[in-house]
Image (cartoon, rainbow, N blue to C red; front, side, top):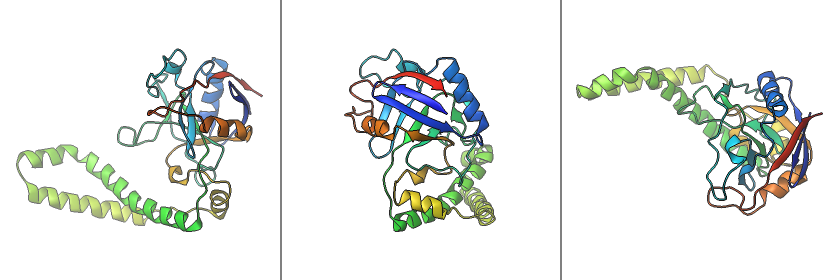
Amino acid sequence: MIRLETTRGNVVIKLFDETPLHRDNFIRQIEQGTYEGTLFHRVISNFMVQAGDPDSKDAKPGQILGSGDLGYTIPAEINFPKYYHCRGALAAARQGDQVNPERASSACQFYIVTGTVYSKEMLTSMEEQRNEQQVRQLYNLQTRKYKELFDKMRLSDDYDGIADLEQKMMELAQAKADSMPDFTFTPEQIDDYTTIGGTPHLDGEYTVFGQVIEGMDIIDAIQNVPTDRNDRPKQDIRIINVSVL
């Protein structure tokens, strides 16, 4: 467990042993003092609070933050459905799929979920959308493998060849999706998302590696502060110290 001391109060978080790369990296950064003096630089009510950008330590008022890093990433340890984005979940931030299809995590930036409560009907609709998106994601992965071939066909105006190749890529993506299990929420997840809430649309996309066990009232206080148009709190909320318990 770790204690996160902030200018708004203290939060205690349990780290999961089933995500050892993230656990060990987080502890290493704590011991190296990476988080001391950093800000909660991105705060969105009913969604999450984000921190850990090393560039935020000496940030000027209004400075855009969120791109700071340590020069490396952590391989994804997405352990879904066991760990998911319920209220209080600790997860690693990362770059988007277009530049980061492996979903590797930032070495330092993290977020804590606040989220909102969902109905069972909303979760069912989300399951359907996620399964449809899976085919599209697989298709995009296929087409990236043949980028050079697509480029050559475009240069030669071979639009029939492009259409045929796109159809083949879609068929391959659909076949692979059919061989994979559908995205579904477990009864435990449904119970949490319909009572305490969370951000279920992030499940399976980011590595969840811990859970707040004390101090969610502090996280709630942080998520409700006024922010600017870039979601940065207008009054700095700073991490004073992080310690391993």
